[in-house]
Length: 601
Image (cartoon, rainbow, N blue to C red):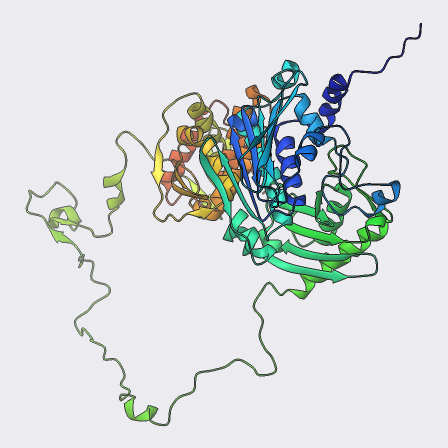
């Protein structure tokens, strides 16, 4: 007897689901794409428990007949392909017909659907055992898919799902990708009863971007538009000065389908070379329209990777298009040298209203003697003269106005050492072996690093309120990121409020750089820190977050304003666990010995 056997249909579907249904966001993607292909004008997505409990997608599309409603859950049931040649001209989303079968193999699925010409609709319920039940129901035109208890029959797959916050983030990403391709369709997304997106039909892609990502992103975009015999490129790219430290808002679409391409991403980054600093990435929303026969979209189970017939030529065309767009858009003000600067014109009656010109008068004291030693700025003090040499201020009962009144404000018990601040970068002070130099910025970085570490260990941290605050629009996904980490940020010393898709920072940790309190810049820095913190092991997260917070907080040009402040900085530094090096290994303190000084003379 042979060793080969044909797998049962249900088991084959469960194996196929491993490729198509990787996580809840995969289900959202497939059902939304089906809704778009059904010529819908409105698509609603409802999520419960980040998709574990419920994923529901409702559309007002063409609907299905009772027989098609049952057949759509069979493997490779599709209306998009009839023969092999059709694979070379695919412009729709779903075409392989395996998504619904795969979803039904790992969850409990029900469908209500009705065509406009039918008086009643049909409800199809699929159980985990493969049984199918159908019934006639009253329902609106379109389709209503409900997917419950995802991976309930595959506990190993369910165990590997991430936290609800992470899974919801992936769902929002898939929702955004589909919503961007069809600005004329209304989309909505709600999670656990909370509305995250309510997108009305948009006049253009730019209005859809505005609704999805906010004015801060859209305001930094410029049009890209190039047409060649190979490809038509259109969409938007970000201004160089708006490039960010974190990846986000980088989108490629080909013939209306989202795809990932590190190769074409490199083409865009090459065009920005020497325009943006290393480590920054611009936003871009680039749509490619080309002959379907020159692109293969069937090389990946989730169709997020594609293959182009001539990718090297496409690389060159895209890079040149981005460069031309950057060069064509002037990002700074310029003078018109033909007309020259426009000066204000004075009227003919100007002279009537101009008052008489007079020279200022000077008062002269003829009795003033610069060699008189009697202090003219003193204050008479009624007290017993001290035993002092004749002619001293004490015998006359005066206190000189040039006395150092600053000593009245010195902290009790704190003696100020002799220090000098050099170009706002270094503090120089005597030491037992010679002269000590302290790097001010690195000292502040070390202090903030250890302060943040202590706050992450539940030590109380002082917060300094900001004088000026303003909301910063971060989009729904960014607002969720801050909302999920609000308690952590408050423990570190930040005060923030979240309203809709905007974040307002009203307080920062004590010692944070004033120049880092620009609202947009501060929110960007924190967003980058929070986005990266979830990508490292838990035991390293505190250290990495403390390092990032310290770098953000010390990046300003602040310098001690007096010897007292300089000494306070030095004292705080030497109270740290490590006063010699920053957390990333850079030297803070340097000693120049007397021998080294002697060699210079």
